[in-house]
Image (cartoon, rainbow, N blue to C red; front, side, top):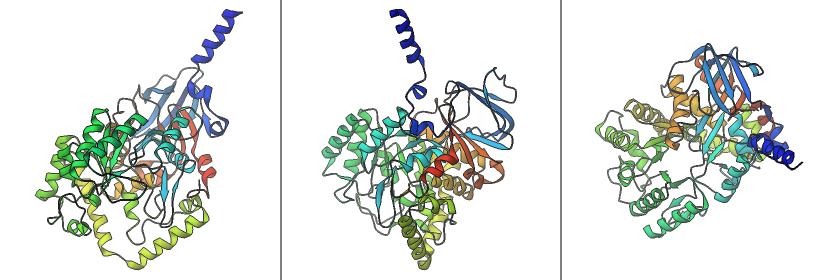
Length: 466
């Protein structure tokens, strides 16, 4: 009897953790959880930059991709999905994907709708890149890992670290020693990254980077008081927002201060200028990637983005009113500067990649609320096309490049045998129309298939509330 009990215990321990621990609230969205699942006859854009391949079969076994190609041997008993007329891409990796959300009137932690919308939109991994509630995010990450909550894999960034001035939910540093203390504390609490904000000094940023690196962690930055080239020289690992936050080109910028008018200096910059190319070269030589967040800045261009009913449907009634009113106010202002700045930002990102830079992408669901979690990532997909990238390049930017920056490219980010089965099944030929990125039917996270439309229905009317 004792040996039989031991046998049962060992059998239970051998079960996949996700299958053993998955809660009922998660299970209701699971469409496929067999040990072997195959998608047949699909078009595959694999995330490596290679062109789309038609007539492809992807075999998933025990959470990983075991084979992909036009002639894959399908084992007996595999659960089969017809991929005819559909496109499969790697799970998107959101590199600036907060779980909090803002409008002109509110800031709220979205522990329910944000992770649901990310996964439903095809985003299987996120880096939070600045936290409003670090402990909430750390617990959310663990709940997802335990199978108690629906959501993507999460890399948690500690609270924003900035200078003596800043929002009250940020850590406002006193000096370099204070920077080291804050980084040390949150490293011990379990965060994965740190984010410097726009009023930090060079000494404080240097101290934060050195302390983070001593703990095996990394630092990114939404900067202003420290320019891109200054931050690269200090050893930063990643830079956020691209052209919009770069003070390299403000000739009158005081050291360690953020000029209020620096964006006016950006309008006249040419991408082939010595100044811009120097920024690129120093970033590339140091291995510093850049995160594109076009969707959040597009909102400040009058009458952009195009209104989508699904975005409005996701919002609570009050949030929808706040968003539409602010959007109308911006349209009335008809800001020529923002039109020019946004056009230059598209050029900047294209030129950075052409120079050899590593570009990734994230939504940043802040501003006045039009770039929702997940939906904003999909909008980035369209905007990167507007910048001049081809579909295969955009998929790579939004998947493998992010994995590279996070240090997980050997595990995910592309559709290759041996990697985790993080996949997105899209209805239609994505290469023919970038807007089809919105047609997500199913998302696989480590081989478990989730019903994307069902998750979208569950969050309708709740963004800005839960």
